[in-house]
Structures are given as C-alpha cells and as structure tokens.
Length: 353
Image 1 (cartoon, rainbow, N blue to C red):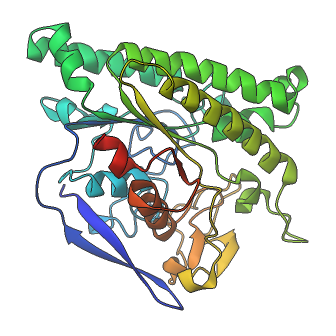
Image 2 (cartoon, rainbow, N blue to C red; image 1 turned 60 degrees about the vertical axis):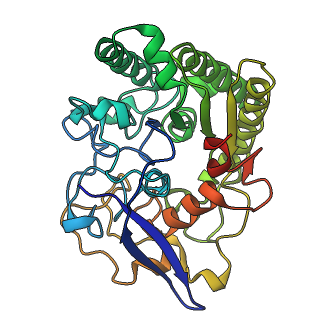
C-alpha cells in the first residue's frame, strides 16, 4: 500500500483534498502509534467487539474504497502525519505486522480502548493502553533480536517518533456511562489526575524501552460530538467538555514534567480544542450530525449510503471526524503555527530537534 501525502485546497465553500505520492526518505526511522479509534487502522478487525470499522461505508474514500478498520471515510490524522513525515507506506497495525515492517513502525491503537483496562469493555474485547505497551515490548524484543543487542535496539528506538492519542473512552465508555462505578468513586478533578498518573507510568515504560521523542494528544471537545449534542437545542454537553479540559490540563503538566528531565527526552502536547474549525472559510457546514446513517450505538450502519458532500461534514459517524477534518488536524499538528495547538513545538520541529 502506497502512502499518500495530503494537502488542502481551501476555497470559500469547500475543503478539497489533493493526494500525491510521497517520495524520499522518512524524517524518522520509525513511528510507533498508541491510542483508540482515532488512530486504529485494523487492530480490532478480528476481535469479538462491536467497536470495529471493517465494513462499508467506512473507508469509502480510502484507496480502492477499502474498509480497512479505520473509523472514518478515508485517512486518519496519524495516517496523514506519517505521510508528511515521509513514510511511503502506511504504518501497519500490530495485528498484521511481520518481518522488517517492525523497523518502520507499528500501530497498536484499538477502537474503544482507554488508559484504564475496563474502559470500552461493554462493547466487547478491546486492547487497552497497558496491553498496547505489552505488544510494543514484544516488538522491541524482535528488534533486539534482529539487531543483535538491546543496546543497539535502544539506540535505534531513540531516533523514532512515538504518538499517543488516548483517553476519550475513559470518559465516553467509562466515567459517563449510566450507573458508572468510576464516576461514583471519583470527582472529575480526581479522575483526571488518576488517568494522567496511570498514563505517566505507561509513558515511563515507553521511555525505558527507548522512547525519546513523544507526541501526547489531548482530548477534543467530546461533549460536542453528535452522540452528545442535544437534539432539541443543538448545544454541547458541558459536563463532558469540562471533564476533557481537566484531563488536558493534567496532561499538559505531565508533558512539561517530562520535558524538564535532563535525559534527552523531547515531548510535545497537542491540544485540538485550540483554534476554530467552524470558520466558514474552511467549508464545513454540518457540525451536529453524522455523514453516514448510523446504527443505535452511533457507528455507521453497515452498507448505509453516506452523504455525498463529505468535505462539508465535520463528523463521519456520531463519534469520529471525517477525512477532511483529519487533514486539517494533521497539518496543524505537523507544521502548524497556531499558538497553543502544539506545545512547545509542532511535530516537524520535534523530529528535527
């Protein structure tokens, strides 16, 4: 599968996506991806779970209209960022990784997964962040075996990029579920601290296994996704948004603490709530409903016919953004200059530092 680099042509009415082939050498030797459905590219396909996207109309704008397991109509944000980093092929999912693919990177992300083990389990089997870290350790052992020593594998992995985008399901599919024992145990302030503390331990595991350049992605305004929009007033769920912002504050503090260590580590924090994608010049017109017809749980109904003007829709299903939104997010994360969107630096600067 050939990776493609994606640019936007922004007119006053629509965001159009132009795709061209990437040539040249990647800016980092490998990219290792951890997360949930915003990054999953097929790890859930063979799991006994409702959280999977390996059926149409998912993938309708992916090369060959292929529903690979990505929870969108085409490319995810990390797909597009990988292309801008110079990777000519998409980073493979852990479920399908073999041979020397492990050196260019692995995607461990799992739809519905969270930082906490129990998050998303009501949907079926998911691969929690802790399990994703264990899968990465399997890959590290294979890299060590091929390079001949653990020291050589660490030297290699220190030059790679690590991308962590997780936490939404710890709220959507845990804390804010009806009759949740988690919300009965913690206040929103306590829960944000608990999540980030647990996340810090997992990041330390990555650090111990060689990670030195790490992107930590905060939560979006999860109270404004169609699943939680008030259909009568069109307003967002303020409690969900407030919880997400608390998580982001704690995550930003974690990134600052890691950057203050004198061990060569370089972290950056991505805050996608900064900026205004509702700007009419970007072409998005529909923000409160999904492009694809959905089933009861908010995912696309299998075989459903989606909207034809997908570049004007912000959301693909009731949870996930369209490829057009992913493109904007990826470009802003990779080399954008919007203050506060990436802190302290964007990815392009991070990989060359």
